[in-house]
Length: 215
Image (cartoon, rainbow, N blue to C red; front, side):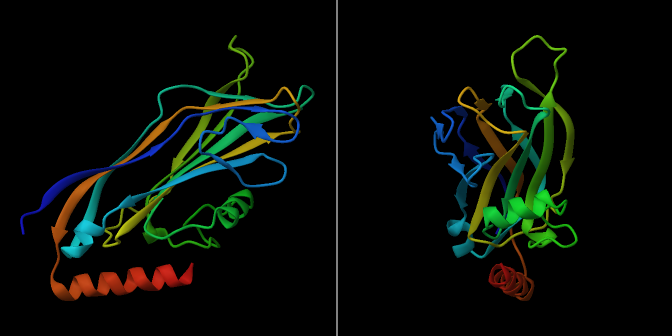
């Protein structure tokens, strides 16, 4: 079969939420992960079962992230610090978001030493840190301070890809005036669908199954 170029995309909605002192409203499909309401996530799936039925392997060659807009976070009025981190991940195995967040909080990013997840399963991964810039006269604007990729870009024969966005709010706490605005996002992976020799393909499927069982 002739190699076929493909561009795979995952869409995540915007979140324009207000906090009433207890819960966030207007989450637009996002989920709050912890009792303190400082950890939010959105997840979706890319279905590749049609390609898997044809015994095709996806070889990524470039990745990208599109999130036109700005990040806004307003913590409680007397908060002594103010920022947020954003994780964008596309992986060939499902992730437990609580485990992922706890690992990240301890400085063990996905695929790193001590992580619960293998580097080879992460087709796309990006970490970003934002913090408030008080020199910019726009209320609660969060400015990007650090961005770091952590993906392997390894080929995958998985029938599904699991796509995540996780936002962790860094502050002294929230109050009834707290606000959060996250722009809509498109995660992209461009690559080639190709047919591998039978033995190589079977070994790749076996490895994919083993990694899924380890999670």
